[in-house]
Length: 276
Length: 276
Image (tube, rainbow over all chains, first blue to last red; front, side):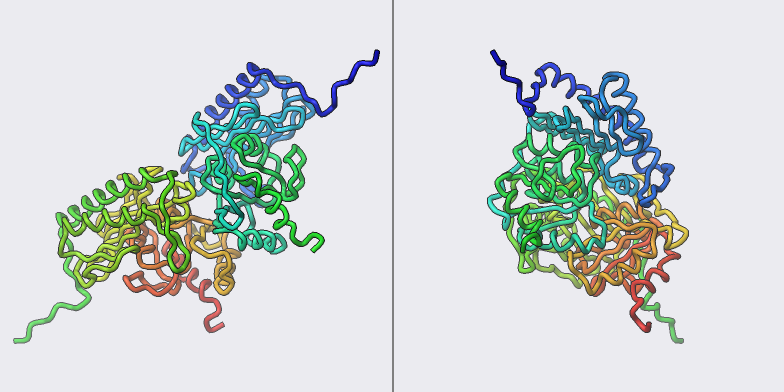
């Protein structure tokens, strides 16, 4: 008798125990990195500049080094994809994606809105995310089948009724991205108001119900790996600019809404040039 | 025998005792308003919209009302110029200029970068200023002949050696101020890097030596009254875009530098269209 094969899309569920172990570990990493962030905040730090002229400080390097050491010591079979150092066994079942300081320029100018970002992919899908702001001591943690929490308190997005009523933040744009500005302008004109934001802090504020939409252009995987678990498990939705789920290889920009029902119309506005 | 008349520009010095009394009172006002800010932060607040479509919340109104009550009770002979209510005896020798929540939109979206602003003019010149961020609990206070303090610790601007090395923040611009963008672009191209800022928090960061230049367009008196005492007494310089001292009636935009020696060149860049 033929036996039915399991569907390829059907993934083994993480046990509750296993999930809790990963969550506890994510907190330990955030605690350790937070100490490094606080040590250097508003202090002189040695800085180099990358090819794209973005700064890298000793805080970025020391933070990522610490995170890598912790992952390798505790879960030697897991992979690591970080911003500052080469990838490590990224074909593993579990891959940690780390941005040691998202918003390095804000860190360097004394703004308490930079953050540690930590995402965990399981078989290529993000299942756990952390945004940690070490100065304001705000930590967002979202995990599939568990929910999203800000400093341990369960949070939910708010459900803005229409695009017209949305308050939005845009972040991560260079000053002159004229080719992209037209898309953002369309959204801006359609919403209640828009402000310059600070990613990833604004994504955390959206998860907690204080913003309705956040849009960023051109983030890399370490900039968005944490977002899906945090926003989707708070009742919102985050995708690329075409409405696709974020993966380890998302090629596009990122948009999040508190009210998932609005996303189809947001995607249309962001792609208004297509087929028009 | 003719006696020499005192020069009109020669103003009576405030006694040390009198200055300390005013400083103590400014702290009391900031303490009282900070309680109101913390009470409403990230809570639902009732909101109206002004003719220019900017929001006014019950936090703005309650904060300004409290400040006015305190000034009138303690210094009934002083004047008051606030953002939300009509001017009160502004021909007085001392006039308090108050912005109950600078950055109302940031307040409403949960960013801990809004602030209370409090400036004191003596015979038309600003002598005392406070920027108070009630969530991060950061208070800048600057006073002539006394200095500038962040949470009680004396601070100084840093002295960037050249415009090319400056890290700058711009804030308070609408998205499309194309007529103004050309001036800002000139500055941006000339500096090390520029970022979207949050006024007035960035002016505080400049006073404390974390930024080299901050530029804002179109602020009103309650947006800038606190800045001169805070930045100039920390060793920097704040003026309008033509290099003029800020007064109760400054008609122009605002620029601050940590290294006052750079200001003439900054003013030239901001007015490059003149006589070119």
